[in-house]
Length: 234
Image (cartoon, rainbow, N blue to C red; front, side, top):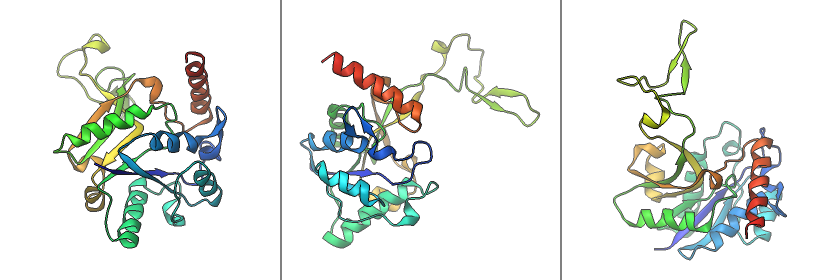
């Protein structure tokens, strides 16, 4: 199986301006995702979808291909990434006359992933009978125990009230946070559906320290800290 990797990196970011090319441990943030993808044998090419000429130049420098610039309407704060996925796949379908066998999305926001996390997702996908594979990590909060929502009367209550009293978080049903480490998808599924959970989905677990998702300056600082610890321990 040969997969095509996509990295979706728009130029605008309100949470952390310039995030995708901000320097992290000596490299632009996007470079980490590109390098992770390039080390996976089952990935035959790495494409970047961006609306930014600056990001495109950095991506090319680190070995990715940037065959098109994403339209502005698909790179706004409120633009769904699923639409960017479809745009990239449709570009390949028009320009090459076919879709990739497998699509892999490797977000820039999880630089602490390891290449084996991508390999594990591809391995899970290869088992068959699945439309998508996502990554998850153990959740720090549970909707059955310590996640609350606001009620109409101003009080708060559990997001999912359990059938019986749960005295410890460990006794609640196990739940997970979705991670942005890697997504593997069948291209036709992306083109014919509107969201991940419309299909058959499996998950690969990754430890929380590899699943840090950079959206704010605090997230970035945490990533810098963990990256520094990783360097010290190698």
